[in-house]
Length: 309
Length: 309
View (tube, rainbow over the protein chains, first blue to last red):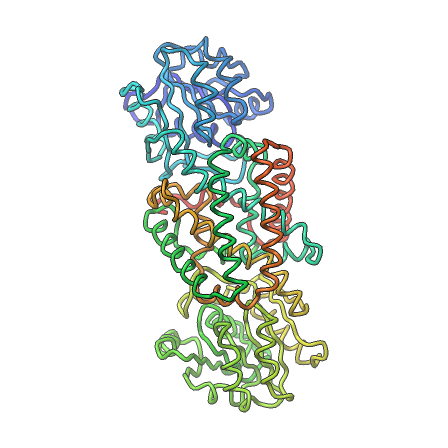
């Protein structure tokens, strides 16, 4: 910890899964809050967070958890934002920052904003980071390093509160970008939600083929399929809720995806190699940009570390 | 190198890209052939393979390269199998094993088998291994370790020749499986070809959205999209040829994929969360099997090594 003054005197994280527990770990390691309060509905998670020692106070009582906190972050499943907000809203400290880490922003704003008192600063946030694992043991302090955190406050947000919350996420290691909830939901539909859906889908399709055994699918997965299975191993509850909550943008992007796929399918049927080659060349350039901008490494990951694997 | 007798006295690899150069490196490191002959049409590649020192003889002359070789492996683009086979066929040594490493087996067999003399042993092979990089510098000796190599010989193949060629691939580090060319092409359509096509497709769809900038797509790619861009960075020529050569199986699997996706799309539109949840749970089990069978690691790769990235 540094001697610099803390950004928050009392930080409360509600929901201690992968994201919540990573926030607690990073906030402590980097000295961002004097007192860390962790809350979770599950007695099992409360007990485990206590064992891990990643918070100063661990409780299942949300009302007690938020009292006196000058920043409260909801890291709960997206179906629970409304209910949790109703419980804590009357007990929030005036002037506190209240935020969340939901993957869909329009739906979170619709659930939380009407319930919150006027004297708190509501700054929805989405850290674009994660792994395919879940739970308090899956978190780690470096999860947000060099990743983006998108914040989607209302236009009349208090500028000092916004600056402080940006500084908090920068302190956690993130780069911060500000946009409207609707635009966030469209961007994430493209970069995350639809890719997950098609990964889930191809893994399902492969499992249903009568002529190819499950054992063959698994044996020969190194040829591309296994990357999809990794994505398709993400938390089923979380992803169900994402699709239901971001219906409009997901259906819009999915419509375009299917149109584009039909175009490729037709090119294959009619032997139009140029159409395929043009696309495959264009997509290679996108990859180069992602590596150039530090969002991935150029290491030949298909080969993966060898040995025990 | 060990003191054991060599499996082959003279091994000739035609085409020294990622796969060909990896075979040369592994064969030398593990002492599988007394003399290694490397051939490539490109003077640039011939020069580079010479510099790398991964073969005893390096030449652009295919006829000279195959003379006296007791095993010849074609690692050329799939469009070139027929032409290269026609050049070398009259000069193959009687009793030699001739093979390839093409990703589609039906089309390779159709191009090569009619041209080959009766006195050679034709054993088509497909090492299910690779990275998203190309060229002689991209190869490495460990590429085939713990990966599958599928061989698809005719039913009347000489059993001693088959046993020797299996031993060769096992010597390179692979596990070997034998099946018919058609079955191979269907299995690979599921585990490799269609996954690549949909990865290419989503990267293209993302690039065409008017409301989302390319820069946003790249910034927020860590949320799932970047895994697709890695796949969609694979060699455009090779993949165009794969789709054109495996048309029947790819269109079959693609038809099922689109049907299944329409089912999910409808579930999202009508808010049928159970249908999504059921699939997402089933796909998680497939992932576990892949890890259990050593085809990938459980390391939380979404987080990727942090730092410079």
